[in-house]
Length: 381
Image 1 (spheres, helix red, strand yellow):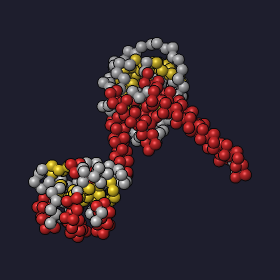
Image 2 (cartoon, rainbow, N blue to C red; image 1 turned 90 degrees about the vertical axis):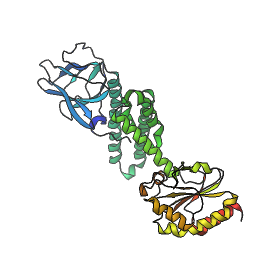
Image 3 (tube, one colour; image 1 turned 30 degrees about the vertical axis):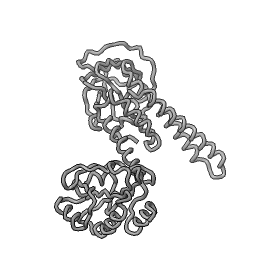
Image 4 (cartoon, rainbow, N blue to C red; image 1 turned 30 degrees about the horizontal axis):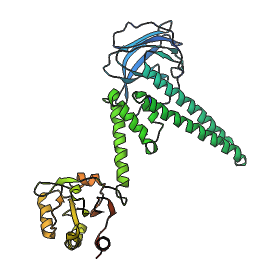
């Protein structure tokens, strides 16, 4: 689920009604909020902007005797704001430069009583909050009801569970439709918080793509974009070495500073071998790899060696001493921070991946007799 802190995306229930107040503000600012808040006379109304998950005050107003108030600020971009009397008695807005917003409601409960004109994104935000709040209340009622039923009332309890599942499915369906219908508005961000990226990645990608133009410069968009990227990388790594899967390309420099690419070896059976001069088990395995290379290279077997060394001299010396005669040796000399090792999620060495002629995984971690047996199976001798 998308991780955005503060009560910004708390499920705030809001009743959206028509608004008849057409008064204008006199405060300076390219974003203005005015209207009437009943039962709040003399109280301080604060407008806050969310900056790095912190609520920063940008304006305030003492509510007048008749409930009138005026708030204003200057802004160059669309962003989330909170209007509050206390942190608990507050409402969240999604405001754009140039908006003149009219708000009416009851100061005893800013969460549920407000009506709004002049901000379509805030109206969308409140529409979702309202639905989410109603879902929260109904689901809690069903949970409470299920807890009061005894084991002897199993049928009744199952009926309550079924009703809860139906309610949950309906809310998830509403959430997905809300995102799909409003992908260009940041109002979809709280909706993502009620989906599971594991099963609903398409909606996270849909929101990311839809918000790139309207909200691409915000920290919220960056957070969403990074979350999608991290999930996809983790998913690829999780399935990377399943037989028949395709591994990502590796392109790094050889000891002569010439770039060598794994994908250039397509058409051959290739052993991708992560090793290092300082790795004793790797060095102990090298004679076996040399023997198999010499035996099967003429039939289309090759080795692509990726070193996790830190110094070029030790890397080259180990290649020469161990007689690693194949030309495909690469390293960025970054030790465990090797970009290739990160890409392949390598946690220990030696680590090998055997690829077929199409570049698809045959198996991993083949060493010694196991590697020899698999190559004998492939080449027939």
